[in-house]
Length: 285
Image (cartoon, rainbow, N blue to C red; front, top):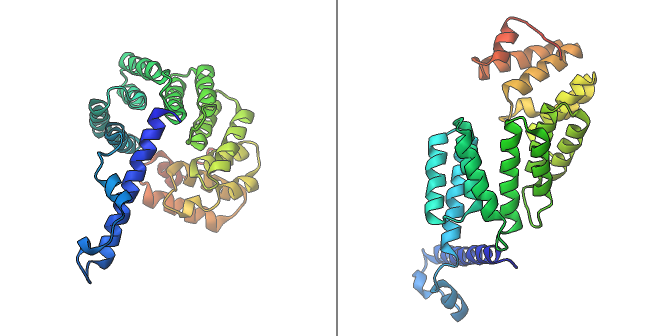
């Protein structure tokens, strides 16, 4: 087992044990003191040892938070947490790859490329886990796709998918499909989105993209089936609601058409799609 993976698993075991002891204490707290709970010597030994690989584990917590901020377009907070992760662990390749995406979003492509170069260099070490290297390659592929370097991006995605132990396979298939749509590879994109759904059958982005491909192929009924109940959930977007409007119009379902249009106008009043609905400007396909 690779050192980084072993230490992380050890850290998680330590946390689970600590939480188990704490939960047991809370269960008996009303009846007796926590100290009266019998704890085995093995538990004592583990709980009194230093937390395994606390450096990497703390860095992972920071980069997880940074990724959440990034997905919510809170770039200042994402940058702050990414820098904190690198201060904790300067050799954390995945943190440099997220830093590259943040620099790209700020349109600083030189710093973005430098960040990815560092991430790839650190990731090439023997000690890097397949999961971490896969995440680095995934992020670099998305960076290249944003630069319209589609062939190079798809190569990075393929490399990410081939990493042993890589856990975000569905997400990589998803962004690979998005990149293929941008490069006018509809057949390949459909395959990638279907692969993404095999890992997460209800992924709203994959279902929307497949529904859009069905609609563009002239199959409105199949597109509506693929879209499913996305538009009646919190996962609805202006794009998915507008596609629903177009599908309802094509299928001559006036009630559905009006319900989706009103939902679009109410939930996303400032969107281009809401403006098109209010003006009844249907640009089919």
